[in-house]
Image 1 (cartoon, one colour):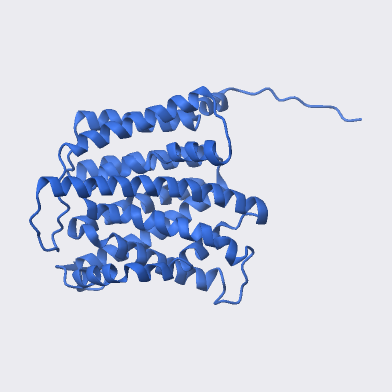
Image 2: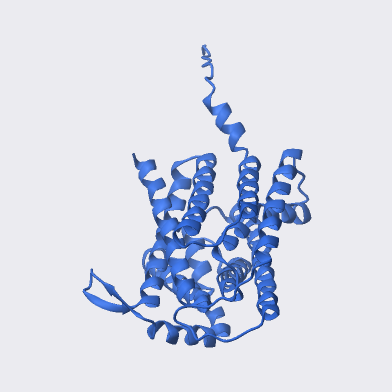
Length: 336
């Protein structure tokens, strides 16, 4: 029952997080940096209270060792969320981020000199082909990112396509930065031990000064947020600017999502965690397509199926599930 509740929390937190993110993008596609800053600030405050005990608890890992992790984490998150302002649609964003296995494999080969079995290369090939199909099809019908609360600026199709290619470049860079971050995090944990809650807190806290460089963007979209159309909130019985309400919802659900996934890793095997996360991504994609009526052709479906089937093969979910379903003989040894 405990595991079931955690899995439900993962789906509820992560899927509702995507819902609030898409509502934000519809109102103001450029609000990604403001949203990222809000998430980092909230998690830093929570960590200051519960992890560092108001600054009295010293970290197990030296703060200097966190610097590379912090820089990578900051760049990956800012670029991922800023891509919405560059004409990247939500379904393509989800499919593209599912290609993290490609970046992880390439980084593993280059940095760690790893070698993989043939089925791994086949699965990554399927994921790559799926992303390429979805990207090419999406590139044929690029639409300018226009929000309900933003001023419409006339642009040409060539300009829209140019910024779309920049958005693809941002997502690609974020993928490889995240992969490099994962490798560094693995090395860091091997050296100092695993302290995921501490790492979560310090990567968010130490990233906050980086937002100074995008401070003007944050302020610009904060003004758009406070001037956005009012949304009536029954709980407080007051109207609130809709973008502010969506950011609050996004920040809270992001925290639920992250904490639920962490608790799931402590209660279940990596097989279960991978299966739950993969299903969650697919459910979020389906919800985005159906509820928000995002354009999705037969070629998008083919690409999506290739990506998710490739992910299942890569993580060896099928083999593990089949082997775990077979009865195992119990062998007892008599000790003298």
